[in-house]
Structures are given as structure tokens and as C-alpha cells.
Image (cartoon, rainbow, N blue to C red; front, side):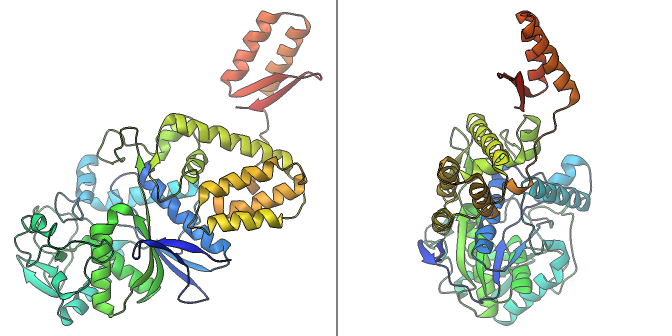
Length: 458
């Protein structure tokens, strides 16, 4: 069945045609590991996971590379501000290397909790300094670089199609950027290698033919994708904030070095998670919410995964705890129904076709969720057929339906329920109500039935 993806490069949905039939090359922008990933970051990473799952669902093999940015670079795409890794080290009184290791592990734990299919490789920028230096050498030999103020720059004017991804008007924005770095020949030039910057206490430096220093941010993604996916590959994913600078510069240096155009065939970008006032979540802001903080408030990681599925990746996702409560209730209802269905059956072909059409229409997860609920409500389907069909859908949704188990109710709760039943039989309504409250505090609901009672976890 045809898979259509919205390509940022062309600004339209296109039929996906892989470079190779045997394997898809997928590169996704990873985290900068100077702090925990917040739930806005995780919305993007979930989009990457959905993308990969849809490719796998369509029968493709996928080689997925996600980088770990553990090398210091400036806080802005425009090479200004302070070093993020150094900022984290100062905040926690640790070395930049300790910060990188701690938050890399924290990010991997978030991926596990959210039921990600792990990337094929999770390469670190600091492990690929050699590859980055070699890429600069290649660009130097081809005449795309110059040295100024102690740094090595990429000369964007040497490319006639620079800025094609963002459709930049090079004469407008450029004037504002040139004032920030007087060493640039052209406003859209960018640093490939720093030996000098606006701060001199940078925590990570390496020897190179260009002097002791460190790579510019954009370089690592090109170097690692070229190493692991080759000079041309299928899909590159990232957030919409990467379009005007980071991804634009990746394309420029990669296509200049290899001569291959296009370097990447399909560019997919996700919108932000936004708050009630319309601002996006930021690690430096008061609205910084992590997955662990959601768990402390009584939500599961899969509650958040379900919440993200409800909005198309190319639309802003409005976050509120009320909306997350709704997702949590829906997921619990889904889990309860799936537990009732467990049994042998066949995947329903009509619903499978409908589901596939929806996810293949540029990853339309909201419509896919709606189809899942249609299956559950269809009285003509047997329980076994519903169960098998939903398990098929879950290969994309990733909600862990096949691993669901009936919660074993603790004896302590059963004892309270028995005491309450006895109180009701004795018409001691006050004691019965008190016991119900105790049961509720333990996270269970007791419902009266003709046979006695039924206990359920909230």
C-alpha cells in the first residue's frame, strides 16, 4: 500500500520511494545531554518512533541513527550564547563528561519507559571528532571554507541553492546575523571548527590541523550520518526549529562535500508541544516538565504516549493536565477492554486496510486511534478477532497491548472489601462507607454486584 509523507523540502505530500528496497536509511536529531529531556522534547522523539514503526509496518527494514550531542556548543543555532554542556557542569558542579554520561543514560531510560524501538545506533558526537575533522578537510579541499578570527567557516555563498529547505530570503535575515560575528564574509556562513569563541572556559577541546578547539554543532550530524548511512539516504527527521539553520547547514556542508543532490530525499519535521499561553516548553523556563515529574503526579509514560498520538505531528500539541487526564482515562478504558478480549482470533482485513490507509497518509495517528475504537465498538466482531486486530495496530501505536496483565489485587484490599460486604449485610452503612474510602485511598474501586462486589484498579 502506498505510503505518503509530507516533505519539507518540497512542501507537499509525496509518495515514499526508497533508495534501496532492502533497507531504509533514517536519521533523527537526538538530544543535547546537559539536562533531562522535557516532555516537549519527548513529543519529537515519539514522532521519530512512530515514523520508524510505520516504515516497519509497511514491511521495510530500517537502519535508524540517532545522534547524542555530548560535545559543547553554543546555546543558539546562530552560534551565540554559552556552551550548554558547560552550563550543565557549572549548575551541578560536575565535569562536562560526567554531565554527558548521566543525562545520556537518563534519556535512554525515558525511551525505555515510553516503549521506543531503540535506534540501530546511538552514536555520540565526542566519539566522532575524527570524522568531523575529515569532513572539514574535504570541504577545505573543495574550496568551501575559509579561516577568520581563529575559526574555520563554511562559505555559504559558494552554493547557489543554499537555504533551499527553509526557502530563505538571503538578503533579509542575513543583515541581522552578520553583526553577531564580524569574522564572517557572508551573513549565512557558519563555523565548522572553533579555536576561539565568545567564552574561553570551554570544557571539551581536541587537537586538529586547524588548531586546538571543538567542532561547530551542525557538523556532527553530517559526519555521523555519512559514516553510518552513506552519502545519500532516505529520511531525516527533526523539529521545525531546525529548518532555518541547523538542517539548512547540514544540507549545505553535506552536499558540498559529497556532490550528491539531494543528500536526503525526505525531510520530516514535527511541531512543538505548546502551553495554554502559546509558548513552547523550554529547559530554561519555569514550565520545564519531565517524564519523571509526570510520573510523580500519577501519570504513566504510556499515558503521555497516548496523549501525543491524539494530535498529528505537523500540528502544535496543546498541553494541559486536563487534556492529559483525558488521555489517561482513555488509555485505561482501552487496557480494560483489551484484557476482556484476550483470546485467539484473526486480524480483520477491512479494519486493517482502513488503519493502514490512515497511518500511510502522512502518519495520521489521530485517525488511526479512531479506527482502533471503531474495532472495539463493532459488535459483529468476535472478541478474538478484535484482540488480534488491535495487536496488529499496536505495532504502530506502541502501547504495549500484548504485554497487558490483569493486576493481582493485594490480600489487604480483598480483606477490606470483605469487611465492607459484611458491614453492608449488617446494614452498617457508615462503616461500609469508611471502608470504601480506605479502599479508594489504595487506588482501587469497589463496585457492588448481585454476587457481592467487584474490585478494580483506578
